[in-house]
Amino acid sequence: MVDKRGLEVSVAIGEAVKLADADVIAAYPITPQTHIVENLAQLVADGELDAEFIPVESEHSAMSACLGSAATGARTFTATAGQGLELMHEVLYVASSMRLPIVMTVANRALSAPLSVWGDHSDVMSVRDTGWIQIFTENGQEVVDNVLCAFRIAEDHRVLLPVMIHLDGFHLSHMIEAMFFPEQGEVDQFLPPNNYPLPLDPNKPVTMGDFGPPAIYSEAKWAQEVNIRASRDVILQCWQEFGDRFGRHYSPVEHYRTEDAKVLLLTMGSFSETAATAVDEMRSEGKNVGLVKLRLWRPFPFDEIRQAVKGAEVLIVLDRALSFGGPGGPVCSEIKSALYQQEKSPKVVSFVGGLGGRDIQVADFKEIVERGTEIAEKGSSREFEMFGVRGE
Amino acid sequence: MAKSESELTWQDIEVGMIATEPANARQYQTGTWRSQRPTYNFDRCIKCGLCYIYCPEGCIYQNAKGHFETNLFYCKGCGICAQECPTRAITMAEEEE
Ligand code: SF4
Ligand code: SF4
Image 1 (tube, each protein chain N blue to C red):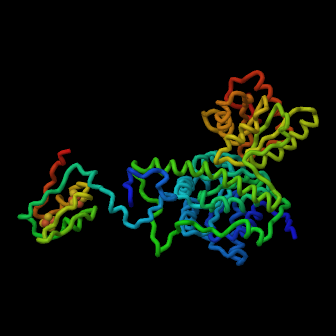
Image 2: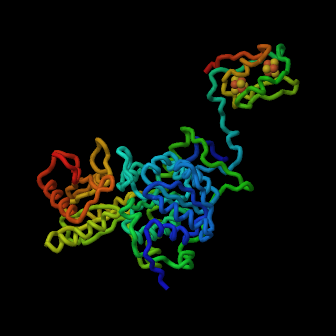
Image 3: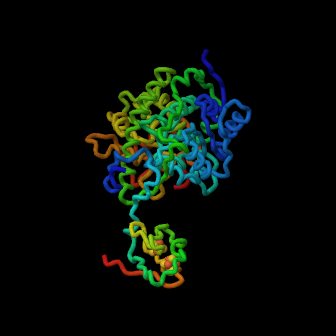
């Protein structure tokens, strides 16, 4: 029997973590992630999930506790957002460098100041280079599915890396949606028990997080780089098998009505749903517009991006974060660099918008496409367009 | 450990650079950091063992005659032993090279 239920996405994450049978959850509540942690604490307290819930005093401690937990071979989960992600920043590098499989959902939130609890991707971009596998999600079903996939990817012995699942704060975290939940037996078949190769064990002592003098540091970092690049194949394999079993398919870059599209819009996260509606409307108005959605943020899907935009004349990228004094939206600048050496590539126009929880609606996306196409034709003196900002 | 640290390739490194061999720091020659070495005048030494207690590197040992001496493989040349010796039996000498 198919289990289909309407739940708040934050609560659905708890269901996914329960299905994955996590052993340890160490987390600190922060808006807009609070419901995720609150619900997990409840599940553990009610005995519905047989796990240790560690109520830590900060996000720095949350991630530190996750390191210890993952090092013992326990299946480990946490969640955070915005300032909380920033507070755990230095520990994020330790998790990936020590190759500890931790799964974390991030309810993407803007960074202070001014104080904002609302969503954007400033927090995502600040942890871009921390060595975590990072996946964007568009709706609740994708979050649930990818939390299950994340454990399998992270714990795969060819990977052994932490995974972040990004979901837009409020726009997605607080949405109530109908979702399918696989049965426990199906999940158990899909997700084998965690079997960390060198866990902390008093009978077989090891040293983790050792000192790395100049003679060995570069080798350690290169090993890590080779490893995250190679994780791509395991991620693809995992999504393939997930699709075969459960009928929902994922890929690093996804396309919506891109066939013969001259103008492409590129988005990530929950705004892609609205962008898709805008594309439908523009198509019915006879405009040749399509949508490309970036799902896999790290490792960056260079080939898939090149392939996805190949035939287009204009590519408009909407970032929900600013790189102050930099080349425009952070995602757009990576896409530009991925396309730079190509013989033929579309003109790329960078838009930044949807900051600090500001909505971008269907009509706004249509305006972005219109203005982006114009800029691609006529050029602009600006590195990027700041969409919807008041003032000349 | 078959290879020394400066010979290891990135493929040789254990996952997450985990050290599987306990106490392999023993192979780490901290003596190369030294610019001065402690020298002993055993005639002055009263075998009190203070240098042994104070050495932060734990590299001072008692020889067969009961005098205290330094293992130069590990000695970093900090000079604490010479500072603490009550009889000035230890003098720091410049390393030539
Ligand atoms: S110089 Fe420092 S390290 Fe060397 S033996 Fe003396 S106290 Fe120990
Ligand atoms: S501190 Fe001086 S006197 Fe005491 S054992 Fe060491 S060298 Fe000898």
